[in-house]
Image (tube, rainbow, N blue to C red):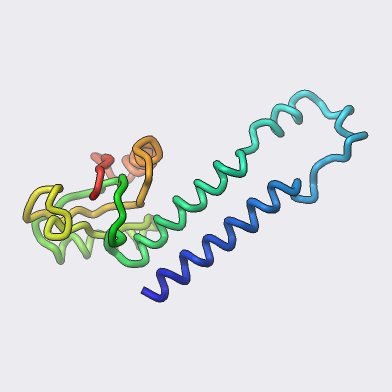
Length: 157
C-alpha cells in the first residue's frame, strides 16, 4: 500500500511539474518579435498542444493505471472503465496470464467476481488500466486488441 501511495504521489508531482512547465512556456517558446516570422505550420503545431487541464487529466489517468498495476487488483473504491484482455474460471491461471501480460510490457491485473459481483460469478478477468471515461478505455482496447484479440471495455464498480 505504501508503494502504491508513493507511486501516486510521484506521478502527481511529475504531473504538476509538467503542467507548470507547459503553462510557463517551457523555456523554448519564441519571443514576440520572432513570432511574426513563424511559418503557418509552426503556428498550427503550437495550437495543437494539449491544454494544461487535458495534460493534468492524462497524467492522473496514467497514475491510476500505475496504481492498479502495482497492486495487481482493482483499486479499492474505484469506479470506472477498464480493458478486459481475457476471462478465466481459474484464479491461478488468470494471475499467471496477467503476469505474462506484464512481462510483455502491458500493465495488467486480475478482477475477481467475488470482489465485483456485478461482473458475474466464478470468473476472473485479466484487465489492463483504470479509466474514468469509456472513450479513453475504448482507445486503449483498440490498441491492445492487436496483441490481445477480443479485448473490450468494461465498467467496473
